[in-house]
Image: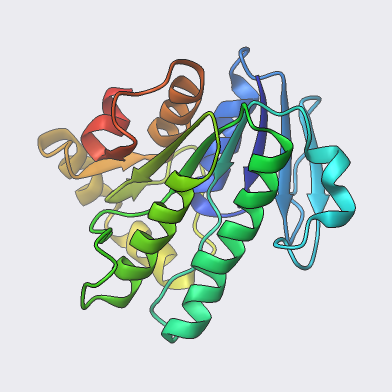
Length: 219
């Protein structure tokens, strides 16, 4: 399986990249992002572009891939709706439309979030925009598309978030998150489990296009 990975330098993307490089079923990984991943591996190739949404110049490198794991995102905490929409909806759909045209047999897996609102009319801005993004992705002509809605994600294997606030929270609450994962696994997953689930679902599919923590952990 050949995989395109967006957002490989983020916390979730780092975990997904790790699992792809470890899994013998994944032959190649093409990481696309605004900054280098910062590691080398025989399976790994990179495309670094200042505007990830504009892929016209690199389309030949995007062909012949079986799956796209889209882990690129941004926190809504410091953005207004227009700016948040430009990254969450506009950029994501620009990438997805290109990939569905180049790879109609591709499986797309998009990292959304617990609480996403697919009615598109809810009062919570980020949930509404994420829901609109999910709906648009599910309408594109991929072989299949799946929306991952993790809740609390525990970073493992030395992985850290690029967001300072999240780094502080994960450092201060590491033991509590581990305990929650043991007693309330439906609310907590890990970077490792997210990556393993993506690979499994890209290979074998899933009965439901929207997957929360329980389904992610089960796969």
